[in-house]
Amino acid sequence: MRHLSLFVCALSLALGLILPHPATAAEKPAGTPLTLGIVPYMSTGMLLRTHAALAQSLESSLQRPVNLRTAPDYKSFFQRLRAGDYDIAITPPHYGWLAIRDHGFQPLLVHRDPIRGILVSAADQPVKNIADLRGASIAVTDRSALMAILGAQTLADEGLVENRDYQFVSAVSHSSAIHNAITGKTRAALVNATSLVLSPPEIRQRTQVWRDLAVFPGQFYIAHARLGEDYKAVIAALQAFERSPAGQEFFTSTAQGGFRALTADDRKTLERALPETRRQLREADQK
Image (tube, rainbow, N blue to C red):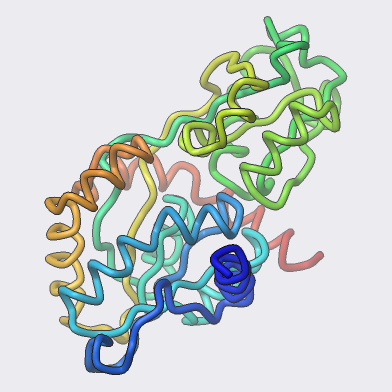
């Protein structure tokens, strides 16, 4: 029965319909539900398990039900973000900055530790140098992801040009990108270091990390303009979660360090990536 319950929860999250944990009518907080959208950087089941404690803490602090939702892929996630489907969103920094700049979202907090985009391969066929990537395919979650944008720039600086010397291949999540690399479907994968930390031990044992290809600000937490001044209460609730035992466990397990405020350096970094971010998303909309 427990396995069936987890399956139903995971399926519901994939469809964007889930309450993160069962609650009776008496246990549910009063008030209008809040929808928390999470970028699909991990498998649906891992997203559910990783963020359930956060949703529970927000419900308790805000006294409002919190519905966890995601999307099938990065393109769909940004389309739903732009359309206003989420009251609060946990999003890649360049999507978050674009939503703030162009779509009226309010910045909340940023994960304290930067995102590390690592290049990984199968442990039994490790990538050892840049030459090993010539003629290779590299799995990424989405070509419009900031990790792919910055990773391509790093490889170009070292003499490898995308679509001439190597190709990016899209995967539905970081988890599936890692799987592609360790099974030989692709030569390597460019993934969030956190996704490898959260992978099952049997996956980590089959994976070899070569090096960082992209380092940039952590995930953004942003609020839709319709929350108005309530965004301040959301910030306070997130900070309360950070201080709680569940929050400390969350940030230890995900290696994301906690929360911090958006900085001028963040804005400068993301402004430089904004033209390519917009171009990639326009191309994705046309497909």
